[in-house]
Image (cartoon, rainbow, N blue to C red):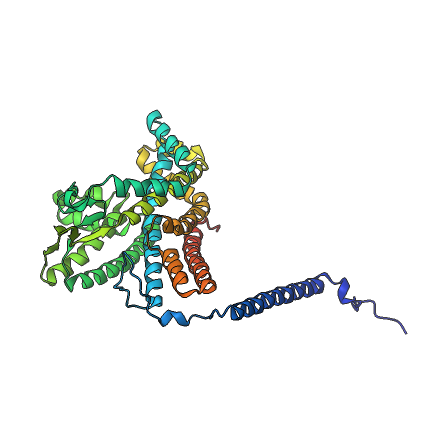
Length: 419
């Protein structure tokens, strides 16, 4: 009898790398599970010895503490769940506005750092070097002192512009009085955003097929009927920012039409001195102003370096070729340099924006009622320290993951696709 040499020889599983890897992973999971179970059971036992209740049943209890500012209606008679929700919204407000302002300011300073003007370049360099090396907590204390100590009291409030009051209790703005039409204007604005996205995609497809944008083709048709009139609008229809200009026009037009249909209300809710305080309008507290200013200025210094590095990563031949075609410096930066630099800028920019969101937890140092502030108050009143710390971890984890998901989607969209 002859043996079949084509049959694979059987190897013991401990000599198979793939099987060994699976066994090691299973063992690692079991070890982590056992350690987690031990820590959990040990914690539960110690809490029972100390007669400390566990769980999240305190959510439904009355909070019995006020929160100085809130985006939704809240009072001390509301539950701890309502109070924590107010903290989440306050943190989101700071993070959302801070991310937008930081991106804009950091981009501006980063571009200024590469300016051919010696003074502008040096000022940008000083801004970056100084602010990067001052701890964020010290900057928050400085701006809080600036807002709360240097500004006068409500009776002597400063009025830089009619309808705006500055005092040590915050910045007060005039806002439109309550009216149902403003809700429908918001819905119209969301509809306008959807329409702008569709029009932009349609215009790009037409440009790929014909070489002209949808608005340029529209201009060509109108020019034949009214050449003298359309010559005035030629820079708008044929300019490099035609899509952007029409998007802005639509975003303003639809809410304006709804406002007209709703009766065109013009009543305003202006801030005014009432007793020892200012009533009316809306306001940003000194704590919010100090936190937002500190986070934006500190983080923008790092974003500026990210932008500078991204711009310098683009070959200088790109700028030289654009100049040879007669493009102006502003167009070269917006249409050629920045779109290519974004592929280098976005990954480290994501990290800096995440840092801004996490650094917002320092708000507790200056008394701004963010989620950490509210959670700490809840822990002090209920004694639910483990649950409170766990909630803080989960909330900031969710904030970071949401920011990462959006930035990763944008990074994927801006990445070069090989054909």
